[in-house]
Amino acid sequence: MVSSLISRASRKFLKPTLLSSSFSSSIFNPLIPSHPNPSQNISITSFKPTHIGIYDHHFCKNVGSLSNFQLVVHISTSPLRLGQDKENKNQSSISSCNVSSGGGVSWIDLYLHTSVQPYARLARLDKPIGTWLLLWPCVWSITLAAHPGHLPDLKMLALFGCGALLLRGAGCTINDLIDRDIDTKVERTKLRPVASGILTPFQGLSFLGFQLLLGLGILLQLNNYSRVLGASSLLLVFSYPLMKRFTFWPQAFLGLTFNWGALLGWAAVKGNLDPSIVLPLYASGVCWTLVYDTIYAHQDKEDDLKVGVKSTALRFGDSTKEWLTGFGIASLSSLALSGFNAELGWPYYAFLGVASGHLGWQIWTVDLSSRSDCNRKFVSNKWYGAIIFGGILAGRLSL
Image 1: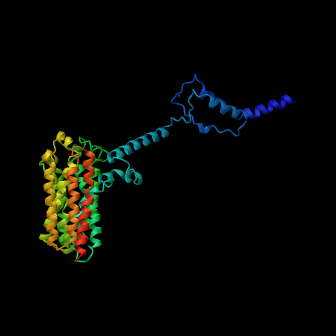
Image 2: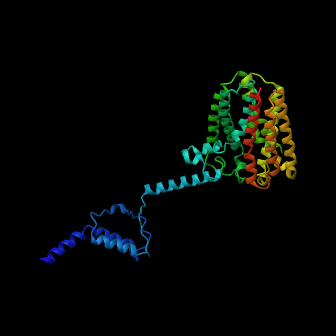
Image 3: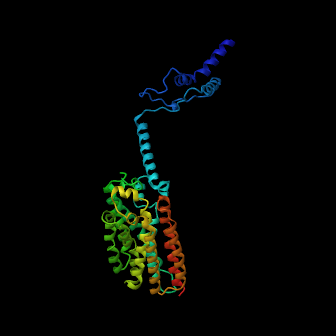
């Protein structure tokens, strides 16, 4: 009687764990290869015991003691699973490529969909310094055009802020499309979206059309005089990327392009140009660009020599700091002349003294053989632009 009860109890406890026993022997048997046959499709999800008994307790204990064997959690060779793994691997490689090209994880990686990220990088949305350098001359000019004792036109500042973001992005797109063969040979640029093949030239061209269309919408908000003046800058925007192939002075041509806002900002407020004010302001911006973009060009001078493109960094060579000092003096002198003709108050000249110290610090402390220091000094120019803006604003409000 007792033996019959024991036999029934044993069958009750052992029956639900039969699959567990067979499964464990197939995984932990050292005579069975650790790599299963590709035709198999084994999943641990099919193992669903109805209850836990004494036998299961001993099974878990035995598993923990077999440290010399590998526990296979999930094995699946179905086409769907393999396709998902391949897709995840491709997405991972693209993501790591994007992170590498940006020097680290940026807000683009965190907040934008993967399909949009290459276009955001093409427009350099993760590197706003270019937008600041394009915007500051516009802001200077708009503030100069304000009435004495009044703040600059806030609507104009907002329009030009959006315009600077779009035009700078369009310029980067044009540059990457034209230079895609050169960019693949330069360490700093080889992972850009077009050069690396993430985007095709047609996709880049389509994106450029979208950027220019949005820019046109902003330009149409201005007066007719400004529309013509603004549209004329496109000739400079499209031709600048070609200059490095023909002249050692592409930085001067960039200065003519990037500081067009010194003319356009005044025209948007006044409906005309005052040459005695805007031309010195424009000249100061061109000389300022020669300073910061020559420092920037020293990052690529070895690659430029190999590829065969030209720059002021190669032109000036060991005399770079002497040349930059001359351009810095010319820039500050032109700013002083523009402010004098605009009849700005004395605070402007105090700010100009601070700006001269900042520019001098850049020129004489930069290590032209260090890419990181060149980039650090280049990026610091956003503060130089902010100092000049503060001076113009204070000089205008003091009247």
